[in-house]
Length: 267
Image (cartoon, rainbow, N blue to C red; front, side, top):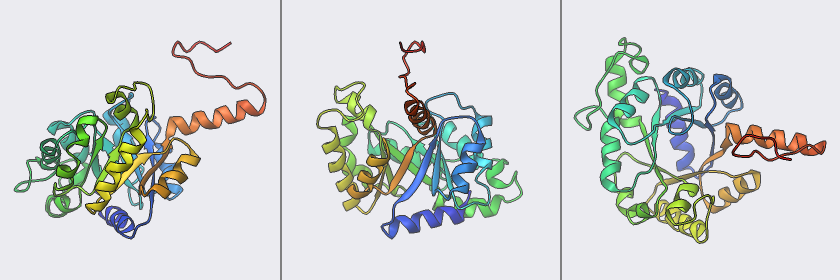
């Protein structure tokens, strides 16, 4: 656990500054090394969607050692074993998808904390220096571990105020695409009315003294999100940033194409 980086991140958020990060979906730990070298405040290693396995995840976590960058793992679902394993491998926190209730959020916090505050088992893995620093890690982990829920359904909107009261949670993320799907606008990033609903929830969370995050859909959207008061700002997904760059290069020479679901080249 990179306690120094976690403390710095929380201090930055408390001061009202934006904290910029990268959503990592590709295997190469060089991606996370680049994020660290460029001074990004955080990365989220995505183990919900895509193909990253535990070997890939630990390689990304190793890339942030002795840096000022916080590394979190987005687990596939709210699961005690997944949270324990991600944290044992050395993640600074977990991002939990599809959280819809206060009860689910309290469970996530409990899974991420050692007794007596939680039910996390202790292991001789990276987080404890392979057993060399059981006492040191156990004494600081509960206080510093990050548990970040993603609000991405209409049902979760009704529980926002209750979730804000959960101890041990100070950052909330939004998933506009899934939220839009749950609102009946499948395939939209922000369907009709969804942008307004997310902003309303953001205001409620900020009024409760917590912080909000979202993935920017582009550079203009990144600036817009800063102005809207989001502070945990992903500049994008690694694959999305790469595709954006490829499209720009191909467009410059009149060869730009769109990817099709069949992966056949567009005519």
